[in-house]
Length: 365
Image 1 (spheres, helix red, strand yellow):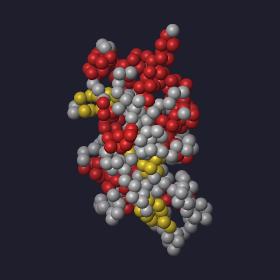
Image 2: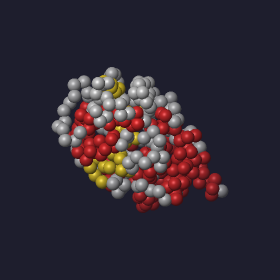
Image 3: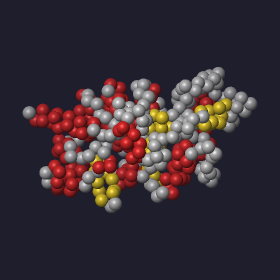
Image 4: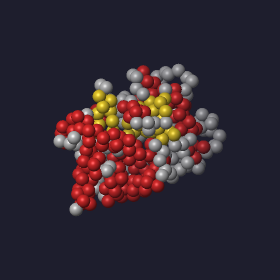
């Protein structure tokens, strides 16, 4: 009977997380096993009363009142779940508030610690099987793509140069301007491990690579899950090195208020694997740019073909625009500066996070 009761509470918890306006959590054996690993029955009992939306995060007192559970018991379970990274915490006007995380955040947090112990490897295998079967559909829930490529150009990632707005290039299209504007508005930055590469270990790209911003940075720093806090100059230096390693920058599909800049690879990253491996195209918005090669400057070193993760350049330096996502990695890595990123579109994301998530909710499949 106890096993049946436990199964019921984990299915109820999955259903609660599935109500997130951001992403869904399809049912499978793997996801129930994952929830069992991430929540004790006592924790799950409290988690059922947590909102599935950041904007509705509640205090421990509110959770206790709604659930009818003892407040001391509730606080104990909240602390335990936070230590494991199973739920999200926000500081709202100096008040601690709690909520569940959508599936991708729920996947990421445990591996942000860099864990490679036996339980972590088991958890990673469960997630890989889940994403390959039904879970990848959780990342593609709407006609509005919640992530986008942050295009990179040498002039927008060089730390030493002064920030300058490029003609025709919007702030949210320039790595440097994007980061500097966030710093100007007092938003924190934190360096965290790439959860995808820690979990799936399919390549040897840099692990200490991803940037949490704003409330996400506060969460990682508060819970001692960040490697360290960063300045805007630190962020740009790290991102430039990641680009030189061939990694692709992705961020929220918003103009401002973004909470992450990830440095991604097609072999581990859930976002890019969704596009390449799982054929979920409604996840990532391409940038407004494509590369153009100056044949007179080009030495035919083929570095562009080596660093392009989407095979947009072939060995004869022919360019296939249908494969290109406009990441700019080839431009940043061209030793002859023979490649220039040209703006060819004017796709404009929603202004801020609340606008973007409302759009996701309005256009869900």
